[in-house]
Every structure is written in structure tokens, then in C-alpha cells.
Image (cartoon, rainbow, N blue to C red; front, top):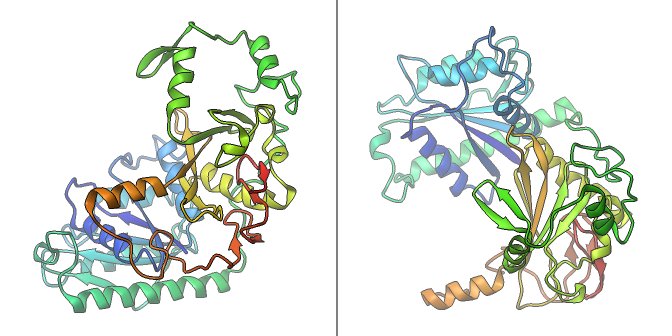
Length: 412
């Protein structure tokens, strides 16, 4: 379950932000909570419509894709902050991501009653026509005397308060499930992904067959691409093409660039395919992502891309078991954005965390103990079946592994 936590204050120091961060950390095994800040949201003004701006659309996508929302509100003059009110105005002017969305209200205040009056007012706003959120009834969390509520590690001190907060969150999670049943299947928020890259974007190099084994060479010739000692003006430096290649090849992880048209256009090839964590070949560069994957994984690949394209998540991590107990390989899918905040493609970086974990343990003198895998938290034997986290297909450690983005199918 994915929840969005909205910090209802634009203050640099906010106890309500602290409360949400505590919830994010304390209950991470129960639910995924992602915090969003409203401090950069412009003041609402219908004569200066900012609905299509990147920041408003970013929040629109995140809230639309979430299963539910938690709003942490302070109390200013018996009501919510102007910044939170303005934020809600944008989300009920021309777009309505909170409509039929389950919402839980929490709040912290210096005084005994917490933010009870602000919460009551916020509930009225959320239930107003145009917003139409489904606020969790009869359940609220009020944190009073907040200045003394947290310890030096930003954890709640009082055990009873911790228990109440956990019980309230669990009730909200059940409420989200009930609303989901009442509302029925979610309408798709994003258009289906064109994994065959039949469209084009501003940087598409036309007139060259994407599946051509020498796509790079043909494309470079067509656009007169610079090479060798020609300089490239980057946003924080000037490098020659050779220096840029040296730099990318030296990064201790495997990098892949797939553009917003779902075309695989780069990887920092430093090893033969059979020695890579996610095997790729030079002939794959230029291919549409569909041609880089087995058809059985299309649904999983589409899900990852839609998470990034819509802003529902900016980073998706997938642990791909290799059958080697001395490695812990993670595929990280990072969304990339242009200067206007528009989706520009994904950066997949594949990294073996185990050497880093071993180094950390050696330097600190700590040890991993117990029968539970201390990193993934999953108990597994070497004979257990592994689940491909992207395609959802079940596979054993001796079967073929499928790289979720490059799709290079390889047998270990």
C-alpha cells in the first residue's frame, strides 16, 4: 500500500513534518509513506492559473496514484495554515486528485488539545464539493505538548502515544481497503506504454531501423555526433567526449539510459555481457524496450515505467536474486526530468550492494546475525523459489533471470 504524507506547513522547522517523518520511519514495515512538501507551491490565484505547472502536476500525479493520503496539520488561529489551504485550492480548481481518495488527518500542537480545531476545519474543507475526499470518520490523532513529545533521535517518547498512533494508522489502512472495494477497480491514470517506441520525441533520430545492430554508428553519422577530443558543454563542466566516456565507464555500477519514447539509447559498457550483472550487448542499443524484453515481462516493465512517468514513484528498486550468496544485486530505476520538470526517461543503475555491506561491517565491527536475511528481510533457503519482482514470474535460482529493463535474458 502506498500513502502520500502531506506536510501542512511551509515552515523550515515543523513538528508536523517531524511527526510524518517519524511515521514514515517507524511504520515502514507496515506501509510505504512518501512525504511531499508544499512550501514551494505558489499561492492560489485563479487569474494566474498554475494548474499545468510542473509542481502542481507533480502533486496531482502522486496523489492520484496513491492508495491514500495522510495530512499533518498544525493549528494557526484555530484553523489550518494559509499554505495548506492554498494547496488544497489548487487541487480542487481544475483538477481533483483527492476526489474519493481516503484521507487520514493527524496533527501536532504546542497545547494540550493538539490541533483539534484545525483538524475539524480541515475535515470540512476536504469534504466540500470540488474536493470530495473520503476522510476517515471518527478517527484522528492529536499530538499535544509537542515540544516535549520527541527524544533526541526524533522518536516519540511515550509508549502509549506510539501505540495509539500505530492503531490509528492500521485502522486507516483497513479503511483504505474498504474504500477500494466500494469504489471498484481504479481507472488507469496513465496511457498504456508504447514499449515498441513507435512515436517520436524531440531527440528521436529518424530514418534508422531501431533494431539495426549498428544503430549507434548509423545514428552518429546521421546527426554528425561529436567524438574523440571534441568538447561537450555540460551544466557543471566541460569535457571531451573521450573524457566523458572514461568518466562513465569508471562509475562502479552498470548504467542504462532509456528515453521517454521507450527507446534504449545508452549503457556504459565496461565488461563482456557474461561478466555483467545485467547482461547487455552493443547491438541492443537503439532498440525499442519491447525488443529488449521477453513478452512475458511487458506488464511488469510497463508498470515500472508508468510509476516513473506519472511521478507516482521517482525511484523503483528491485532485488534480483542471482543464486550467489556473496552478492546482493539491486536494479534501481530512477526517473529523469528535463528543466521543465517533464519526464525525460529512466536511468537504470545496477549495483551489487554486498561488497559495500561487507566494507561497512568490517569498518564498524558490526555483524549480521539471525536466520533472517538482514538486508531483504526475507527468510529463504537456497532451494526456495525466487519471485521476479518486476515480471511477477516465479523462477528458481537455476532458471533464467530476466533483467527488468534491458530485458537481456541470460542463464547463470
